[in-house]
Length: 208
Length: 208
DNA sequence: GTTTTTGCACTGACCAGTCAGTTCAAGTAA
DNA sequence: TTACTTGAACTGACTGGTCAGTGCAAAAAC
Image (cartoon, rainbow over all chains, first blue to last red):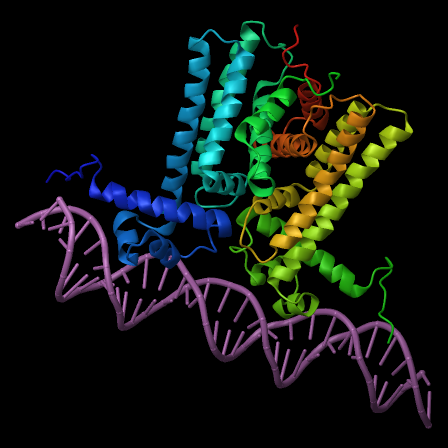
């Protein structure tokens, strides 16, 4: 039989899975994967434990699909920012700047996911290691693409190290944003964006 | 009775604790705190489980002391770099650059500790939350200090946001270095340092 | 009438922490 | 020198509890 759909157009299963993602992401961000129990996730999602296993083969599978889901949202948002800038005739620096902002918006909207992503990204010897590699490369590749185009059209020095610079930029935004969330949450996104723009464009050691 | 000393001058207990730190740091970096068992730590350290509890009140306490120990090494190294630059009459940009290098050297020598530090730093709701805050601030404060001095003597724009910029710089180095270790370990430290220097000094959008 | 969810009891593996007992180097005594 | 004592350091089997995952009958949703 065809899967039935709710008024919103999503299947019932999808709605349940969404609730489980949301419950799992905050719990795992706070406590880590191993310290989070399936019972907790089910309870927070307002669902029976059996439902978790009806929808996901195991706890790890739930987590892996959660990762893929979240990174999909992030890369889509980064790509959109880069393309919009290009469409509007902006330079590559403008594109990077727009991506920094898109990153901040994403982190602002999904702080737990970001936390969890950073915490698991450099782990080795874990079941979902391969998923993580794929998922990392997906996000960094978008930044690398813009850098590479900038080198080709002469806007960036051809001496820059594209993969390393991309990683450094991602790290800059990630860590600055997590610090913002954790230690000075009252500041506005524009404020944080301005500070990072300044750093990005080398206007730190400029003068007053 | 006086505690006996080995030929190296350290007490036997200290030597055991050191072995436990070393075993714990790699295991926790790979698997995370909760997924690492005390039995594993004891086995890797070549010691009985009881010895762990003879030396540390609990698994969490072992971890907290490990954190403090490692961050102590890092901040000492950062401070030393800043002071050496000052002594040699370097500018504040030189000091930042020296600190970037010191950070890279540290991460190169203690990659597991760095991994673990990043993974646990933004967790909330954990027993050692307060330890983490202290330990984070300790490291970031060194960078903030140099930035603040630079603003005071006019070398940096007084529009920069000191805490946020410090966090962003730390993040840049941390993430770039972890990526270096994980994905392109064949590259030399000088290479990585050069790429980050370029970014730090805004020589990215300069021309060929 | 089919799919999805519920509720709940159950199992087996795993694991933090405990504790009674062992080891051994340094100290004391004769 | 030799015999005995002391106490810090260490050992590893054991316990009590936790948790991922199962099984299933009945209910609800569609």
